[in-house]
Length: 577
Image (cartoon, rainbow, N blue to C red; front, side, top):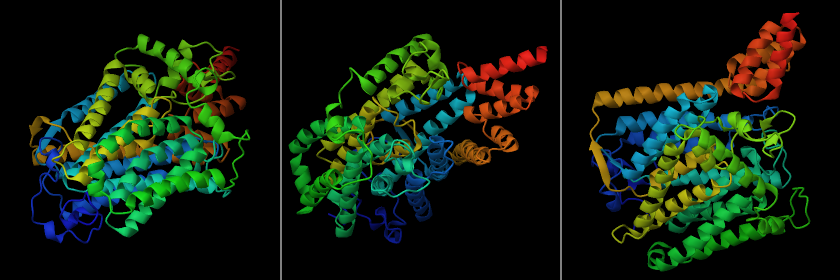
């Protein structure tokens, strides 16, 4: 078995970029025996293309983990928008490199389901309440699909561990930022609320990322033939376990518990695979790191100010509490969101538009609304699945569900496929674990609506989940590849530009001046806060004709919000006089 079990026998399939000369002239269509019947196949990546893909996966994943700005007036977007910019820039690079590398392409059922989800989301965007919200949400979906495509090609080239290491490194970086905050270090880019959120802005988001990264780093540490890499992987296991405990996030805890309940019996039945893969003593190292991380998080005093003498025990007791508190609120929100589905079953209200339309189907006393503004407290529902069906419609929801189910099925088949090498079988199990954890967490929180978890899910799904039997096959011509690369380049460049302008708008808004606010409003038409502030400042100075434009823009973004309508009414009254 080669160094780092699970990598292909050629030295060029490992993370090191200087060891690829041996395979430079060997055409490589498929690196996996279990993948021979399907997937997205390509000729061997050139050394240069492979190096670019490696760098982009690492820079994209870790960049999305730590990217944030310090404009505290935008307490959510100052974390979300920089991460979206990194995701789109990564998708731009990966998409162009991957499309140029594709030669013979076979499509499996999971890929068709994912393409259907993407196409139906695009169609739903054209019927959206607010096109600006739709563009922003759709951009994350498109970029995630491009990451999946690139990861599929990385898998066929034997580079799945490159993707796994990048995802594991991103999860570790995010968890470290949360732990640093939890133990008293203050930094302007850290979350101000819902600590320890670190560079992700919210402790729930940290927990989601840590849970998704855990099976990946467990697999990397358990199967690595390098002692140094095994130690790094074990350190990552410790860090992620500690972050999960300190987060007190019930969705992540429940997902881990359900995953464990399903995974442990399956691993026990396949213990012969584990014996074939694990280095002697490696299970003790990895398992010990997991235990130490949990115990350390509970035992070492931290700076978190919980409103309870036994916060972790209280959270554990409330994991499945749906009769009161946030659990009851979620159920009520899900039930009310189904009214949006009944009104718009085919196309939904449009990607990213749940918050714009939800107030229309609930009473003003609904707990998801802020009484003073009539708007939702969060920009998305507390569930990926509720967002999918209410924003994109039933057909799109079914396509997404089919994608997840097929990925899970292919993972299970790969794990049980005795024809596959043992390390790859365990890799398939880890990839399926990531898909399962995201699906469970997505029942109770927003996960893949955000940039970093999107990159992690689709990167791991593409790289580690075995592909299925082919449904269609074609060989794109050079002209087709150039056209597709151009389309991807234009779309992703626009996504990057929109994100960059939003960050610049935050900077301008933070000056607090009328000119700065008006300039910010012109740069970010999707920001309700900026548009409303510009309208208020202009109205207060008696410039109603100018205020009307920004107030109308704010009202189009959120038709049921009270404040813009109030300004419009005042301006209309002033004009009448």
